[in-house]
Image 1 (cartoon, rainbow, N blue to C red):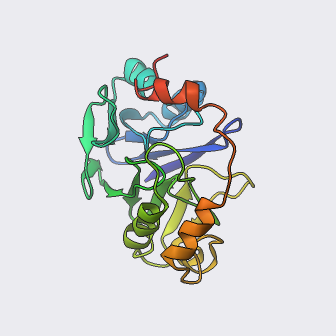
Image 2: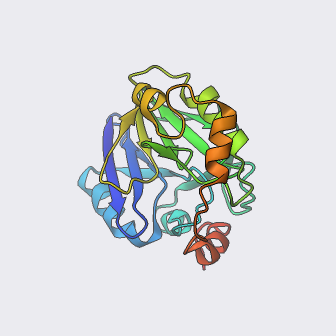
Image 3: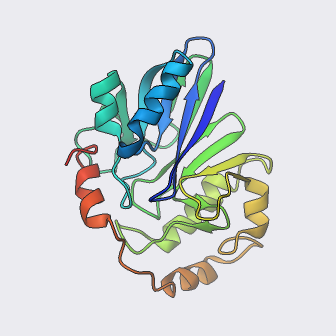
Length: 228
């Protein structure tokens, strides 16, 4: 498997390239519109054909590259069916699977940060978007967010995986690249050490976070697959 982790500095967003060494077919998870040339260079470097663009949710902090990639490479745009995005090509549900050569990508529905959050499991890796972050999680006060739902999603869909499963988040603000399910289950400041749902909900309710800086630009654009 060919794998590469990209980082977009302004929103601290990670984008992931996964590709088959057998068929040279590739997918991008959570691509950012401003970084499309970096993706094109990496695809060309490995002689890859981009077949799918996967968004873990409708982002509020950056504009997705989904439509630009579809125009440039002819790939399919993949989103959860609850995303409210009409311009997608493929709408997935919990435990839907996408195959790229020898690679199976399993969707796990992990709502709570938004109503359409989806994590993707590939072998011993899980790409969690904003549902589970390293030592944290996504906020739950916008886009039909729910702390109760997020708690259940993480415990039922992510923390049930093997301890050694590598967690690749949608963002990190401290330069960390990955974690593991076992580490987050034990040490995550918001969810670790068996914290109760009541404790988690109270913690999330009291965060008092500022209004998202780019939501008024990013959200309408991303509901149109990244078109202005």
